[in-house]
Amino acid sequence: MDEDNTAGHSSWIKQHPVYEDLMNLDVGDGAQVYAAFLVYLNLTEVRGWEDVVGVACPELQVVLLEGREKEGELVRVVYPLPAHRTVSHKDLRCILDRGHPMLLCAVASDSTLVYQQLCDGLLTPEPPVGIQDQGRRQHRKRRLQT
Image 1 (cartoon, rainbow, N blue to C red):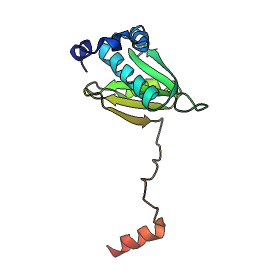
Image 2 (image 1 turned 90 degrees about the vertical axis):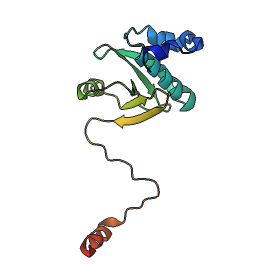
Image 3 (image 1 turned 180 degrees about the vertical axis):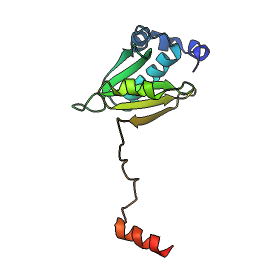
Image 4 (image 1 turned 120 degrees about the vertical axis):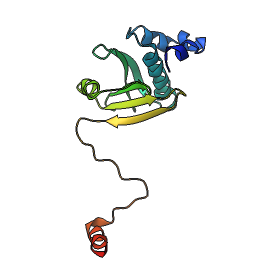
């Protein structure tokens, strides 16, 4: 998703009103704006998010997306990141300090999107589907047998 690849995209993308709005945020990184547009389309057309808008983050010179997964839920920030770009802890801290839950969305050159939830501090993950907690006694018995 470098500058050369974004130049070859269909003209409908460049004429799309949301793409034009994202370009008007003037972040100066065409690949990141294109990634933001792909994520915008995925959030609104596939995942059904509401009130999704692009906002400039002047500190990082990137476009962030803000929206709601469902009506009445808190606003979430999505950071669209082309997969070939790097991100630092300082960058993530800058976005997390905005006070909204955050998703990092890596955008591959083939337009594959991978979302990762980021939070301030540690987050206990949900247990995998189909796995039941055996309880502490079960774990202790296994440990004693080995």
